[in-house]
Length: 164
Picture: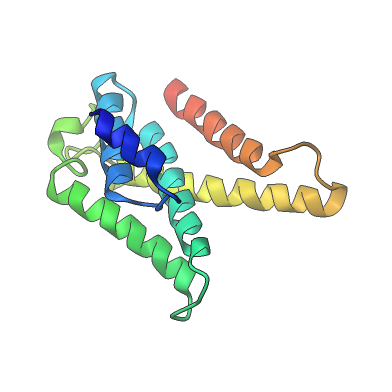
């Protein structure tokens, strides 16, 4: 187990959306389910995580190889993450359903984890845009403003989903 930490600290640069990150995210999802955290809340953070790592990865590529490269990398990252979850039964599985949901663990016909991921992406992008608008109009209010905006948006949404 210690060799994983040694490898992580010995790397010259991080590689976004690596197998270790995917495994860690999957382990986090399993732990959250074990402790009873709702899939919508987990999905919010998971979607934001996938978006941020895929954007980070796309920005690390210095040359555009194809048109719309960044959105394609984001889409591929989501597909690479979601497809195995569906095939493994982590998403859309009846064993994770609640009484108020449809029998297959969905809400409005969409898997709760997937819906949370999509909402997390929307909140991430919305908070990032809000921070840009504030910077444009009033300047930078405080260090790490964009990160704080994103974290606050995700935290408020998480609290709302936990209370409802």
